[in-house]
Image (cartoon, rainbow, N blue to C red; front, side):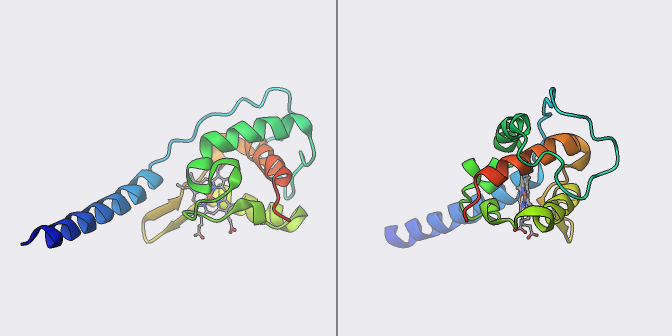
Length: 141
Ligand code: HEC
């Protein structure tokens, strides 16, 4: 093999290797607990829409909870690098809340591959609605 072909082979191998590492790393995200002190407890049953919309304490908690739990896929500041949807474009208001809730509880798991882990039990609805409240503050439109 000449040098040029060899470089191409190495490059192809590296691209393949890093792509598969990414998939595994993503399925393996350990949720980071979020301190929700200062917010009302919401109980075990999920609300249908965000009870903390516009709540300043929730927005503050949500900003750091997002960076710890979501940014690695959805991007710092929710500016997606393309791995996962750009959450600045999530629908507003109740329709967006419903889809948000559905996704964070169930994650996205297809054919045994975890594209997005489930967060409902690990973080709880107080922390997750806080993230949703923060996302409202970085909307793209
Ligand atoms: C391991 C990567 C990963 C992490 C971590 C992750 N997500 Fe996701 N998320 C994805 C992927 C990939 C999709 C698209 C799934 C699909 O379409 O099947 C997605 C989809 C979503 C959607 C639906 C977006 C849409 O436009 O349909 C929401 C809402 C969401 N994620 C919220 C979150 C929140 C909140 C967190 C943190 C608590 C989080 N995600 C953490 C990878 C991730």
